[in-house]
Structure formats: C-alpha cells, structure tokens
Length: 220
Image (cartoon, rainbow, N blue to C red; front, side, top):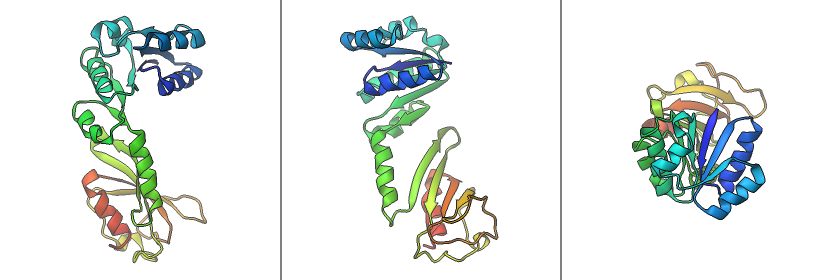
C-alpha cells in the first residue's frame, strides 16, 4: 500500500516509522528543509522537501497512485487543503487529516475529508468517560453511513439494573452488539439479557439518537 504523509513533525515521523515496519511504501512531504534533511538522513529516501498543499509537489510525490493520503501538519488549514487537493485533483480514495481544533471537524467532514483525528477530542472523550454523570464514550464514527459506535456504561443507580433488555424501549435503528459484564466473558445481548450495574454495552446508533439510547439504557 502506498501512503503519503504531509508533515514530518513528531507525529508524521513516528507514523512513518510504524508504517515502514509494516512493510508499506511511505513518502513524507515536509515543508521545512532542515526537517526534511533530518528525516532523510535517519530513514533514507522516504521524504521530499516541499509544500503538501501544492499540486506540483503532490504530482512529484506520485499522489495519483496513493492508496491513503494523511495530512498531519500543525496547521488545520494546511491539512484541509492538502487532503482536498489529493482527493479531488488526484482521486486518492482515502484521506485522513489531523485536526487541532475540534470545532473544525464538522467542516472537514462537510468538505469531503474521509477521516479526521483530533487528539483534543479524544482526550475530552476519555475525561467525559471518567465522569459518572456522562456514561457514554464515542468509539468510532462511520461517516459514510451516518452512524456512531459508542460504549455505554450502566450506572449502579440506574433504574434499568435488573431489567431485561426486551422491557427497555430503545431508539429506532439502534443495535446493541456486545455486552461486557464485570465478572464474565463478553456476550451478544438478547432480549432476555438482564442488565447489571457497571455493564458495558457496545452499540451502533445515529448521532442524533445517542443521547436517547444512553438515557434509555440508564432509565432516564
């Protein structure tokens, strides 16, 4: 698989090393000449010096044959532009962009970026997960289908503790795919499954109904 990475900072550097270890063909595009030279000295001919937002540079990098295009510079605007040029000019099938400001994620998705990664949003999700009053954690967004995979924890004071799933009204098109009890192996939930305190449920739902699903499973 041929993967192009725009941005040779620490994230791009370690991402490249990992992908090379997995035997992928990887090329870094780095705007800073000294950084590009350092990467070349360390890893060989896996980096070119240039602006990953420029069509000529992307053409030189062979972007038209890339399987995945990843932009991980420290600038959201550069990451957006680079991914858009790769997707719409060179027809790269999969684009991934780093987003430093979580507020920009919606814009990136509206403009066609396939996957956005925000370290700030990921950390915030983990903080929310540690707060008992917000027992829902996002695991994955399936943007093409408009779906979310979430993990919901049944709180000890929930009125649903001791109830069977068949007696709980869930939002339409929400699917409970996995149940993790504290003291037993994970299982596929059925209508007869009895909820217990601290059960973890992996579910597939729509973004606009995830709150209703969380409330239904916790009896709110």
